[in-house]
Length: 207
Image (cartoon, rainbow, N blue to C red):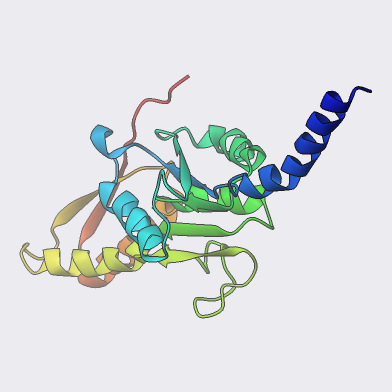
């Protein structure tokens, strides 16, 4: 080997450790799953809360954290494939926001990747967590306990209506909490002496 080529080779070898050190650290990825984006009528408050929580922890989207958004638009049957794709993408955490069905699908998809949910039902009754104070496993999150609020709303409505009034409850059968919510409200209606009509309503299923 000629002297010039030998020296050039040594220079290249000496540069390897520096090049390795200079490579940027991989950016963690959050898998965010919800029904629709805010511009299409989705829950913008939940998305904003997630972004704020990340920022409070020192993570800013596009700078040191990436977010993979997946909008299912009521297509719960596609959740396993969507979640599998996010897991294959190597997400650091899954954030199913909006329904118990999403959170349950995420729990079924992985027992190792952390899952942070936002639902409106009882996470203990649905089997998401073991208890509210000690969720256990890889699942935690926030709930508004919307099922428990139904009877209270009916009681307030009863104060404005004549005795024995008939009230209609519109229920989305695709919502994992729909049946439990209807049972709670029906039981409350009997106590209040009201007649409850449960009407199922949903959007057309997409192909």
